[in-house]
Image (cartoon, rainbow, N blue to C red; front, top):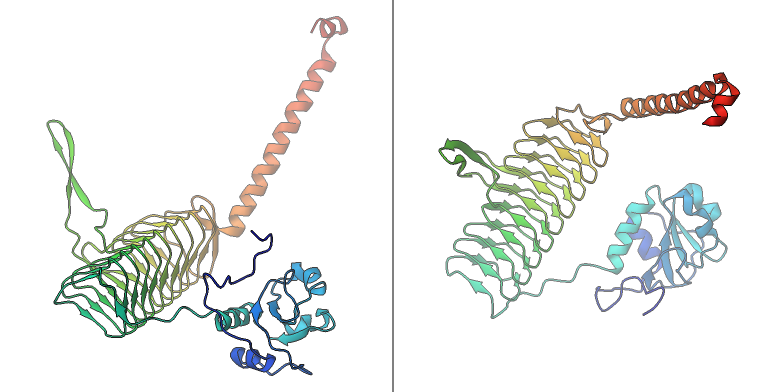
Amino acid sequence: MHSHPELGDARFFERRGPFSAADLAEVIGSAPPENPDDRRYVRVAPLQLAGPTDVSFLDNRKYIPALEASHAGLVIVHPSMVSRVPQGCVALPTREPYLAWAKIANLFHPLPPVQPSIDPTAIIHPTAQVDETAQIGPYVIVEAEAKIGPRGWIAAHAVIGKGVVIGTDCRIGASATVSHAILGNRVVLFPGVRIGQDGFGFATTMTPTGPRHISVPQLGRVVIEDDVEIGANACVDRGSAQDTVVGAGTRIDNLVQIGHNVRIGRCCVIVAQVGISGSAVLEDFVALAGQVGVAGHLRIGRAARVAGQAGVISDLAGGVDYMGMPAQPAKAFLRQVAVLKRLAARKSGGAEADTAQDGADRPKAETSRD
């Protein structure tokens, strides 16, 4: 094994190139760099590993020393950082270096193209509709009346349930299951995702032997709008009496649980191990950091941001950063922490002072006996 393996190992990732500086500038909508040479760039790489035919980037001032020591051939930087680019390295300035990096990295390493085909081990119900441009992998099951749109890619062992509709250019990962769902275009479900299973709904009755839970039929669907990505082993329950909705452009990380009837707005970001209880509403552009818990039947306002491990138990206004349990505006939470620290320090210091004073007040003989 290499101590510094090459980024974008060709065994696992598609690769294109080489590209000129002008090619790269065109991709990000930037003017071509001044005085470019005739080099052609063959890969992307981090600053500390990049060589003369590699492309790298700087988006965090913390890594300026790595930039100044880099041997990269071309570096994407903010205009204010152009002067820090070492001699012999071409600077490609842009006001959004990380966005430019994303575009250029995708240029070098595009998603593998769909290969229109149906694996002979796949089971496709006669009433299912699979577009002729789709790729259906080994042991996939497509049930009755399901529809797979153009250029869809359904990976090995995935199950597409009865009546499910999958739009154009969707990618469904290995062993994912999709039921009771309508998917828009360019939706990506990573391996092991579960879409459309029963929501967690039941009524409880008392019997002579104790409580008994009676399941309530979950009669809604899951509606996933365009350009949504859902990470590995995440779960999105179907609605009970209305649809569960994931808005366009939203990104959901691995191991997230979305309860029944939840409505998530556009371009939200939901990080790993978040749990959202039934009938909660997230307005557009909400961000929930890792392990946030959201109680049911509440609303989180537009562009609110909730820090990791916070507990949301009441409605939150939009455009505010929140922390803590219960979640509250971050400034208020941090002030409370500061006050508690001061109180704890005073208590600790006061106890030590009391002990010292007690010793000083005792007769010497008594103190020596202690």
